[in-house]
Image (cartoon, rainbow, N blue to C red; front, side):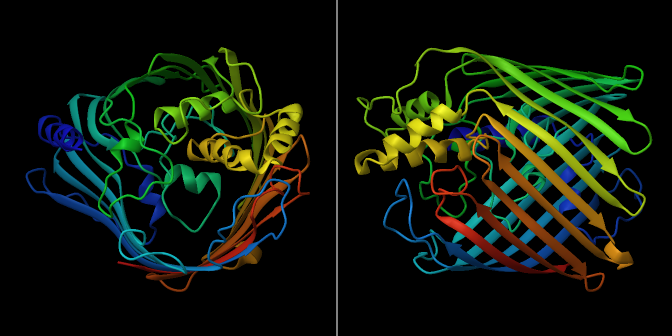
Length: 456
């Protein structure tokens, strides 16, 4: 922990920065952007919000693989204070901070260690060292990829989740923990070059462990040394990006591209590939490394323990209508995930009570890394701004379908701005499928969350 704090302190003092507007500025709408003051003064551009979200949860009563005896609370109330601030220190120097402090109340949740959580999403500085050349350092949320449901080239997504009302993949991508890194970027006419170094600040910790309320969780976001290089450019109507990624002895390569089709459709694709084990082998190895699983634990269900070249793909298209509606359809492929045969092995092994917890650990590991557990998925997402010409309202929804068994998870969300300072939102989620399917085997079946937000 001392090493992590020292690294952040040196970063902020030695390389202050903010070359680009952070995408999280859009997460807390309603703040008024003021005109820039003279360069010699400090400019505070902030968005602040106070929210209360109450949720009700429904659970299944019987399972093909038992998730354990403990039943989560059927209700939860979360109070949070959210802030995103950008200080312009000079024409070439900016500082950005993004943080959310929350307290949750539910049956079985102990206060304060289990209930109170502070998520320092970002704290970084940007220095424009030369025209269109930027140096950034600190905790930064770097997002790569052009897809909506699953982005194979979003290499810094693992172990970054924070508590929030929406389960939409887009919301999870925007509102998450950043990674401590040093980032250099040069923007030129028609493209950009980027190089990132994210150091190891702490050995990885087990999943689901209790953290102190003010723990910055560097042991989650900076558990290994990582390097990312990317090159983006424009080529006629295409917008390609090429990436190379190193993570603790593993190399991955990636490619993103998008292309307009007519005036209302954009086709896109993302690919990442490299030598890797299966999701099962990777999960069990992580469990042994963090001493969650015994060193003698066998690989179950039995699969090959060797590494081979594996690919991840997302491909789809997004349509924009004349009435402010958007529909995206996408196919996702995660080669390291479970095939139809792999799911048979998962259910057969988990039917033995002695191995049920191990099977859920494997799935929990994939969720913690924000990777699909299945090889083949379809994703459909729809957004409608000002539906039926209702001003200040939004509707959205998504469905993720496992193509091996037809089970689904999805959410419908609606929000309405009551005024410039108040917003009301609601999210209803459900999982469907038989007991021996990906989504039908989960304990959770339905949920409904109502959220009231006050902006400042």
